[in-house]
Length: 421
Image (cartoon, rainbow, N blue to C red; front, side, top):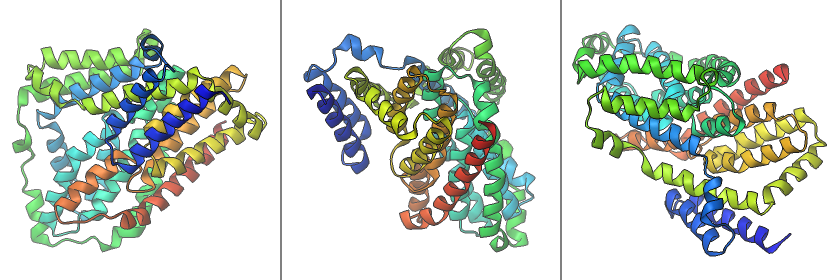
Protein backbone atom coordinates (compact mmCIF):
# COMPACT_ATOMS: atom_id res chain seq x y z
CA UNK A 1 0.00 0.00 0.00
CA UNK A 2 1.38 3.40 -0.98
CA UNK A 3 1.94 6.29 1.43
CA UNK A 4 -0.80 8.43 -0.19
CA UNK A 5 -3.30 5.59 0.24
CA UNK A 6 -2.45 5.22 3.92
CA UNK A 7 -2.80 8.98 4.40
CA UNK A 8 -6.23 9.17 2.71
CA UNK A 9 -7.51 6.20 4.73
CA UNK A 10 -6.22 7.86 7.91
CA UNK A 11 -7.97 11.14 7.05
CA UNK A 12 -11.23 9.31 6.24
CA UNK A 13 -11.14 7.31 9.51
CA UNK A 14 -10.35 10.47 11.50
CA UNK A 15 -13.38 12.20 9.96
CA UNK A 16 -15.61 9.19 10.72
CA UNK A 17 -14.43 9.01 14.35
CA UNK A 18 -15.04 12.74 14.78
CA UNK A 19 -18.57 12.40 13.35
CA UNK A 20 -19.38 9.36 15.52
CA UNK A 21 -18.05 10.94 18.72
CA UNK A 22 -20.13 14.08 18.10
CA UNK A 23 -17.40 16.09 19.86
CA UNK A 24 -16.89 17.94 16.58
CA UNK A 25 -19.82 18.98 14.41
CA UNK A 26 -20.03 16.71 11.36
CA UNK A 27 -19.75 19.68 8.98
CA UNK A 28 -16.55 20.87 10.67
CA UNK A 29 -15.18 17.30 10.65
CA UNK A 30 -15.84 16.79 6.92
CA UNK A 31 -14.38 20.18 5.94
CA UNK A 32 -11.32 19.58 8.17
CA UNK A 33 -10.74 16.29 6.35
CA UNK A 34 -10.99 18.03 2.98
CA UNK A 35 -8.56 20.77 4.05
CA UNK A 36 -6.13 18.12 5.32
CA UNK A 37 -6.04 16.50 1.85
CA UNK A 38 -5.25 19.90 0.31
CA UNK A 39 -2.44 20.67 2.77
CA UNK A 40 -0.98 17.18 2.34
CA UNK A 41 -1.04 17.66 -1.47
CA UNK A 42 -3.19 14.57 -2.00
CA UNK A 43 -5.67 16.69 -3.98
CA UNK A 44 -5.67 20.13 -5.54
CA UNK A 45 -8.78 22.29 -5.87
CA UNK A 46 -9.39 21.45 -9.53
CA UNK A 47 -9.35 17.68 -8.91
CA UNK A 48 -11.34 18.01 -5.67
CA UNK A 49 -14.13 19.92 -7.42
CA UNK A 50 -14.49 17.08 -9.92
CA UNK A 51 -15.47 14.75 -7.04
CA UNK A 52 -18.24 17.01 -5.73
CA UNK A 53 -21.61 15.74 -6.95
CA UNK A 54 -23.29 19.02 -7.83
CA UNK A 55 -26.49 17.25 -8.86
CA UNK A 56 -26.92 15.99 -5.27
CA UNK A 57 -26.08 19.45 -3.91
CA UNK A 58 -28.61 21.05 -6.29
CA UNK A 59 -31.43 18.69 -5.26
CA UNK A 60 -30.79 19.35 -1.57
CA UNK A 61 -30.56 23.13 -1.89
CA UNK A 62 -33.60 23.36 -4.19
CA UNK A 63 -35.87 21.21 -2.06
CA UNK A 64 -34.80 22.85 1.20
CA UNK A 65 -35.69 26.31 -0.13
CA UNK A 66 -38.93 25.09 -1.72
CA UNK A 67 -40.14 23.33 1.46
CA UNK A 68 -39.20 26.37 3.54
CA UNK A 69 -41.59 28.40 1.40
CA UNK A 70 -44.40 25.82 1.45
CA UNK A 71 -44.42 25.41 5.23
CA UNK A 72 -45.11 29.14 5.64
CA UNK A 73 -48.58 28.51 4.21
CA UNK A 74 -49.61 26.27 7.14
CA UNK A 75 -50.26 23.34 4.78
CA UNK A 76 -48.55 20.70 6.92
CA UNK A 77 -50.32 21.66 10.17
CA UNK A 78 -53.61 21.62 8.25
CA UNK A 79 -52.88 18.09 7.01
CA UNK A 80 -52.04 16.83 10.52
CA UNK A 81 -55.27 18.13 12.09
CA UNK A 82 -57.31 16.91 9.14
CA UNK A 83 -55.79 13.43 9.47
CA UNK A 84 -56.68 13.29 13.18
CA UNK A 85 -60.27 14.31 12.45
CA UNK A 86 -60.63 11.84 9.58
CA UNK A 87 -59.62 9.17 12.10
CA UNK A 88 -62.62 10.30 14.22
CA UNK A 89 -60.33 10.90 17.20
CA UNK A 90 -59.69 7.15 17.58
CA UNK A 91 -56.10 6.80 18.96
CA UNK A 92 -55.18 3.72 16.89
CA UNK A 93 -56.59 5.20 13.70
CA UNK A 94 -54.75 8.46 14.45
CA UNK A 95 -51.49 6.52 14.82
CA UNK A 96 -52.00 4.78 11.47
CA UNK A 97 -53.08 7.97 9.69
CA UNK A 98 -50.04 9.84 11.05
CA UNK A 99 -47.75 6.95 10.04
CA UNK A 100 -49.11 7.11 6.50
CA UNK A 101 -48.93 10.92 6.45
CA UNK A 102 -45.32 10.86 7.70
CA UNK A 103 -44.29 8.18 5.18
CA UNK A 104 -45.88 10.04 2.26
CA UNK A 105 -44.37 13.40 3.27
CA UNK A 106 -40.96 11.76 3.81
CA UNK A 107 -41.07 10.37 0.28
CA UNK A 108 -40.98 13.94 -1.03
CA UNK A 109 -39.46 16.00 1.80
CA UNK A 110 -36.35 15.68 3.92
CA UNK A 111 -37.07 13.31 6.84
CA UNK A 112 -35.97 15.85 9.44
CA UNK A 113 -38.32 18.45 7.95
CA UNK A 114 -41.18 15.94 8.05
CA UNK A 115 -40.77 15.00 11.71
CA UNK A 116 -40.32 18.64 12.67
CA UNK A 117 -43.68 19.38 11.05
CA UNK A 118 -45.67 16.36 12.25
CA UNK A 119 -44.06 15.67 15.65
CA UNK A 120 -45.16 18.76 17.63
CA UNK A 121 -48.71 18.43 16.30
CA UNK A 122 -48.75 14.78 17.40
CA UNK A 123 -47.72 15.71 20.94
CA UNK A 124 -50.46 18.38 21.07
CA UNK A 125 -53.15 15.90 19.95
CA UNK A 126 -51.90 13.23 22.41
CA UNK A 127 -52.11 15.75 25.25
CA UNK A 128 -55.73 16.38 24.35
CA UNK A 129 -56.41 12.62 24.28
CA UNK A 130 -54.40 12.17 27.54
CA UNK A 131 -52.16 9.57 25.90
CA UNK A 132 -48.40 8.95 26.00
CA UNK A 133 -47.10 10.36 22.69
CA UNK A 134 -43.93 8.20 22.67
CA UNK A 135 -45.49 5.23 20.76
CA UNK A 136 -46.90 7.71 18.22
CA UNK A 137 -43.53 9.44 17.81
CA UNK A 138 -41.68 6.13 17.48
CA UNK A 139 -44.12 5.02 14.78
CA UNK A 140 -43.51 8.28 12.93
CA UNK A 141 -39.72 7.94 13.11
CA UNK A 142 -39.95 4.44 11.62
CA UNK A 143 -42.39 5.65 8.96
CA UNK A 144 -40.20 8.61 8.00
CA UNK A 145 -37.22 6.35 7.32
CA UNK A 146 -39.34 3.83 5.40
CA UNK A 147 -41.10 6.55 3.39
CA UNK A 148 -37.77 8.22 2.63
CA UNK A 149 -36.57 4.96 1.10
CA UNK A 150 -39.34 5.02 -1.51
CA UNK A 151 -38.22 7.81 -3.82
CA UNK A 152 -35.21 9.50 -5.40
CA UNK A 153 -35.63 12.60 -3.21
CA UNK A 154 -36.85 10.97 0.01
CA UNK A 155 -33.48 10.45 1.67
CA UNK A 156 -30.01 11.92 0.93
CA UNK A 157 -28.46 8.46 0.19
CA UNK A 158 -31.04 7.98 -2.58
CA UNK A 159 -30.24 11.38 -4.08
CA UNK A 160 -26.55 10.43 -4.09
CA UNK A 161 -27.19 6.96 -5.56
CA UNK A 162 -29.59 8.30 -8.19
CA UNK A 163 -27.08 10.89 -9.32
CA UNK A 164 -24.11 8.48 -9.43
CA UNK A 165 -26.00 5.64 -11.15
CA UNK A 166 -28.19 7.84 -13.38
CA UNK A 167 -31.38 6.38 -11.90
CA UNK A 168 -34.62 8.32 -12.34
CA UNK A 169 -37.49 9.09 -9.99
CA UNK A 170 -39.57 6.39 -11.69
CA UNK A 171 -36.71 3.88 -11.29
CA UNK A 172 -36.85 4.38 -7.53
CA UNK A 173 -40.66 4.23 -7.41
CA UNK A 174 -40.72 0.91 -9.25
CA UNK A 175 -38.00 -0.60 -7.03
CA UNK A 176 -37.58 0.89 -3.55
CA UNK A 177 -41.10 2.39 -3.73
CA UNK A 178 -42.77 -1.00 -4.19
CA UNK A 179 -40.91 -2.65 -1.32
CA UNK A 180 -41.44 0.38 0.96
CA UNK A 181 -45.23 -0.01 0.65
CA UNK A 182 -44.95 -3.70 1.57
CA UNK A 183 -42.74 -2.84 4.55
CA UNK A 184 -45.19 -0.19 5.76
CA UNK A 185 -48.00 -2.77 5.79
CA UNK A 186 -45.85 -5.14 7.89
CA UNK A 187 -44.78 -2.39 10.31
CA UNK A 188 -48.35 -1.16 10.82
CA UNK A 189 -49.17 -4.75 11.81
CA UNK A 190 -46.25 -4.77 14.24
CA UNK A 191 -47.39 -1.54 15.90
CA UNK A 192 -50.91 -2.93 16.11
CA UNK A 193 -49.48 -5.89 18.02
CA UNK A 194 -47.34 -3.68 20.29
CA UNK A 195 -49.74 -0.84 21.07
CA UNK A 196 -53.13 -1.32 19.40
CA UNK A 197 -55.06 -2.68 22.37
CA UNK A 198 -53.59 -0.16 24.81
CA UNK A 199 -54.93 2.87 22.98
CA UNK A 200 -58.16 4.16 24.39
CA UNK A 201 -59.40 7.70 24.95
CA UNK A 202 -62.40 9.20 26.75
CA UNK A 203 -65.43 10.58 24.93
CA UNK A 204 -64.68 14.15 26.04
CA UNK A 205 -61.09 13.98 24.79
CA UNK A 206 -62.16 12.59 21.42
CA UNK A 207 -64.78 15.31 21.13
CA UNK A 208 -62.10 17.95 21.81
CA UNK A 209 -59.97 16.61 18.94
CA UNK A 210 -62.97 16.66 16.61
CA UNK A 211 -63.58 20.30 17.52
CA UNK A 212 -60.06 21.38 16.44
CA UNK A 213 -60.26 23.77 13.49
CA UNK A 214 -57.78 22.91 10.74
CA UNK A 215 -58.71 26.12 8.91
CA UNK A 216 -57.00 28.13 11.65
CA UNK A 217 -53.71 26.39 10.86
CA UNK A 218 -53.64 28.04 7.43
CA UNK A 219 -51.42 31.10 7.67
CA UNK A 220 -51.53 32.20 4.04
CA UNK A 221 -54.37 30.89 1.88
CA UNK A 222 -52.99 32.35 -1.35
CA UNK A 223 -49.57 30.80 -0.73
CA UNK A 224 -51.24 27.48 0.12
CA UNK A 225 -53.06 27.40 -3.23
CA UNK A 226 -49.89 28.29 -5.11
CA UNK A 227 -47.94 25.70 -3.09
CA UNK A 228 -50.37 22.91 -4.00
CA UNK A 229 -50.07 23.73 -7.69
CA UNK A 230 -46.27 23.90 -7.45
CA UNK A 231 -46.09 20.60 -5.51
CA UNK A 232 -47.98 18.85 -8.31
CA UNK A 233 -45.61 20.40 -10.86
CA UNK A 234 -42.54 19.37 -8.83
CA UNK A 235 -43.72 15.76 -8.47
CA UNK A 236 -44.44 15.63 -12.21
CA UNK A 237 -41.00 17.13 -12.89
CA UNK A 238 -39.26 14.47 -10.80
CA UNK A 239 -41.30 11.68 -12.37
CA UNK A 240 -40.46 12.70 -15.92
CA UNK A 241 -37.05 14.35 -15.59
CA UNK A 242 -35.43 11.31 -17.21
CA UNK A 243 -37.79 11.50 -20.18
CA UNK A 244 -37.23 15.25 -20.47
CA UNK A 245 -33.47 14.75 -20.42
CA UNK A 246 -32.82 17.06 -17.45
CA UNK A 247 -31.11 16.39 -14.14
CA UNK A 248 -33.16 16.06 -10.93
CA UNK A 249 -31.28 19.07 -9.55
CA UNK A 250 -32.79 21.25 -12.28
CA UNK A 251 -36.29 20.24 -11.14
CA UNK A 252 -35.48 21.06 -7.51
CA UNK A 253 -33.78 24.38 -8.26
CA UNK A 254 -36.64 25.36 -10.60
CA UNK A 255 -39.08 24.65 -7.75
CA UNK A 256 -37.04 26.88 -5.45
CA UNK A 257 -36.93 29.65 -8.04
CA UNK A 258 -40.69 29.47 -8.64
CA UNK A 259 -41.29 29.67 -4.88
CA UNK A 260 -39.19 32.83 -4.70
CA UNK A 261 -40.96 34.49 -7.64
CA UNK A 262 -44.52 33.14 -7.69
CA UNK A 263 -44.88 32.39 -3.97
CA UNK A 264 -44.06 36.00 -3.09
CA UNK A 265 -42.38 34.89 0.13
CA UNK A 266 -39.49 36.67 1.81
CA UNK A 267 -36.63 35.35 -0.33
CA UNK A 268 -33.91 36.03 2.25
CA UNK A 269 -35.85 34.19 4.95
CA UNK A 270 -36.41 30.99 2.96
CA UNK A 271 -32.79 30.99 1.76
CA UNK A 272 -31.52 31.35 5.34
CA UNK A 273 -33.82 28.49 6.41
CA UNK A 274 -31.97 26.04 4.16
CA UNK A 275 -29.62 23.76 6.11
CA UNK A 276 -26.37 25.17 4.79
CA UNK A 277 -24.40 23.21 7.37
CA UNK A 278 -25.67 20.01 5.75
CA UNK A 279 -24.72 21.29 2.28
CA UNK A 280 -21.16 22.08 3.38
CA UNK A 281 -21.00 18.66 5.07
CA UNK A 282 -21.74 17.03 1.72
CA UNK A 283 -19.11 19.13 -0.04
CA UNK A 284 -16.42 18.20 2.49
CA UNK A 285 -17.43 14.54 2.46
CA UNK A 286 -17.36 14.26 -1.33
CA UNK A 287 -13.79 15.61 -1.29
CA UNK A 288 -12.64 13.24 1.49
CA UNK A 289 -14.05 10.21 -0.34
CA UNK A 290 -12.65 11.61 -3.59
CA UNK A 291 -9.21 11.43 -2.01
CA UNK A 292 -9.60 7.67 -1.59
CA UNK A 293 -10.80 7.34 -5.19
CA UNK A 294 -7.88 9.41 -6.50
CA UNK A 295 -5.28 7.30 -4.66
CA UNK A 296 -6.81 3.97 -5.72
CA UNK A 297 -8.07 2.86 -2.28
CA UNK A 298 -11.64 2.42 -3.51
CA UNK A 299 -10.53 0.36 -6.50
CA UNK A 300 -8.57 -1.96 -4.22
CA UNK A 301 -11.56 -2.35 -1.86
CA UNK A 302 -13.80 -3.20 -4.80
CA UNK A 303 -11.38 -5.93 -5.85
CA UNK A 304 -11.35 -7.37 -2.31
CA UNK A 305 -15.17 -7.52 -2.29
CA UNK A 306 -15.26 -9.15 -5.74
CA UNK A 307 -12.68 -11.74 -4.62
CA UNK A 308 -14.67 -12.45 -1.43
CA UNK A 309 -17.97 -13.02 -3.25
CA UNK A 310 -16.30 -14.48 -6.38
CA UNK A 311 -18.28 -11.96 -8.44
CA UNK A 312 -21.60 -13.57 -7.45
CA UNK A 313 -24.13 -10.72 -7.81
CA UNK A 314 -26.71 -12.23 -5.41
CA UNK A 315 -24.14 -12.81 -2.65
CA UNK A 316 -22.63 -9.35 -3.19
CA UNK A 317 -26.12 -7.84 -3.09
CA UNK A 318 -26.97 -9.50 0.25
CA UNK A 319 -23.60 -8.59 1.79
CA UNK A 320 -24.02 -4.95 0.76
CA UNK A 321 -27.66 -4.73 1.85
CA UNK A 322 -27.33 -6.28 5.31
CA UNK A 323 -23.92 -4.70 5.86
CA UNK A 324 -25.37 -1.30 4.96
CA UNK A 325 -28.35 -1.82 7.30
CA UNK A 326 -26.26 -2.89 10.30
CA UNK A 327 -23.65 -0.15 9.89
CA UNK A 328 -26.29 2.50 9.14
CA UNK A 329 -27.97 1.64 12.45
CA UNK A 330 -24.93 3.05 14.25
CA UNK A 331 -23.26 5.34 11.71
CA UNK A 332 -24.52 8.29 9.72
CA UNK A 333 -25.61 6.68 6.44
CA UNK A 334 -24.46 9.61 4.30
CA UNK A 335 -20.67 9.15 4.69
CA UNK A 336 -21.14 5.39 4.48
CA UNK A 337 -23.03 5.63 1.16
CA UNK A 338 -20.57 8.23 -0.11
CA UNK A 339 -17.85 5.61 0.38
CA UNK A 340 -19.82 2.79 -1.27
CA UNK A 341 -20.75 4.73 -4.43
CA UNK A 342 -17.26 4.82 -5.96
CA UNK A 343 -16.78 1.22 -4.74
CA UNK A 344 -19.79 0.03 -6.77
CA UNK A 345 -18.73 2.13 -9.76
CA UNK A 346 -15.33 0.43 -9.63
CA UNK A 347 -17.02 -2.99 -9.50
CA UNK A 348 -19.04 -2.02 -12.57
CA UNK A 349 -15.82 -1.24 -14.40
CA UNK A 350 -14.76 -4.83 -13.68
CA UNK A 351 -17.86 -6.21 -15.40
CA UNK A 352 -20.15 -6.75 -12.39
CA UNK A 353 -23.89 -6.07 -12.93
CA UNK A 354 -24.31 -3.16 -10.51
CA UNK A 355 -28.06 -2.39 -10.83
CA UNK A 356 -29.13 -4.78 -8.01
CA UNK A 357 -26.24 -3.46 -5.90
CA UNK A 358 -27.51 0.12 -6.09
CA UNK A 359 -30.94 -0.95 -4.81
CA UNK A 360 -29.32 -3.10 -2.12
CA UNK A 361 -27.33 -0.14 -0.78
CA UNK A 362 -30.34 2.18 -0.95
CA UNK A 363 -32.58 -0.23 0.98
CA UNK A 364 -29.92 -1.14 3.53
CA UNK A 365 -28.71 2.40 4.22
CA UNK A 366 -32.19 3.97 4.47
CA UNK A 367 -33.98 1.18 6.37
CA UNK A 368 -30.99 0.62 8.66
CA UNK A 369 -31.61 4.08 10.11
CA UNK A 370 -34.48 2.61 12.15
CA UNK A 371 -32.18 0.30 14.12
CA UNK A 372 -31.01 2.68 16.85
CA UNK A 373 -31.59 6.20 18.10
CA UNK A 374 -28.45 7.46 16.30
CA UNK A 375 -29.22 5.68 13.01
CA UNK A 376 -30.75 8.72 11.32
CA UNK A 377 -30.94 12.46 11.92
CA UNK A 378 -34.76 12.33 12.11
CA UNK A 379 -34.50 9.91 15.05
CA UNK A 380 -32.33 12.27 17.07
CA UNK A 381 -34.38 15.36 16.20
CA UNK A 382 -37.79 13.90 17.14
CA UNK A 383 -36.40 12.25 20.28
CA UNK A 384 -35.04 15.65 21.30
CA UNK A 385 -38.46 17.28 20.81
CA UNK A 386 -40.08 14.50 22.86
CA UNK A 387 -37.53 14.80 25.67
CA UNK A 388 -38.03 18.58 25.90
CA UNK A 389 -41.78 18.02 26.26
CA UNK A 390 -41.24 15.61 29.17
CA UNK A 391 -41.64 12.34 27.27
CA UNK A 392 -38.16 10.76 27.24
CA UNK A 393 -37.04 8.50 24.40
CA UNK A 394 -33.78 6.84 25.47
CA UNK A 395 -31.30 4.81 23.41
CA UNK A 396 -32.53 1.65 25.19
CA UNK A 397 -36.25 2.31 24.78
CA UNK A 398 -35.73 3.16 21.12
CA UNK A 399 -33.74 0.05 20.24
CA UNK A 400 -36.44 -2.22 21.74
CA UNK A 401 -38.79 -1.01 19.00
CA UNK A 402 -36.35 0.14 16.31
CA UNK A 403 -34.26 -3.01 15.99
CA UNK A 404 -37.24 -5.36 15.44
CA UNK A 405 -38.62 -2.86 12.90
CA UNK A 406 -35.26 -2.75 11.11
CA UNK A 407 -34.86 -6.54 11.03
CA UNK A 408 -38.44 -7.08 9.81
CA UNK A 409 -37.97 -4.41 7.15
CA UNK A 410 -34.75 -6.02 5.96
CA UNK A 411 -36.35 -9.47 5.79
CA UNK A 412 -39.11 -8.09 3.55
CA UNK A 413 -36.55 -6.18 1.47
CA UNK A 414 -34.33 -9.25 1.12
CA UNK A 415 -37.24 -11.41 -0.04
CA UNK A 416 -38.18 -8.75 -2.60
CA UNK A 417 -34.62 -8.44 -3.92
CA UNK A 418 -34.14 -12.21 -4.17
CA UNK A 419 -37.41 -12.63 -6.04
CA UNK A 420 -36.78 -9.71 -8.40
CA UNK A 421 -33.04 -10.09 -9.02
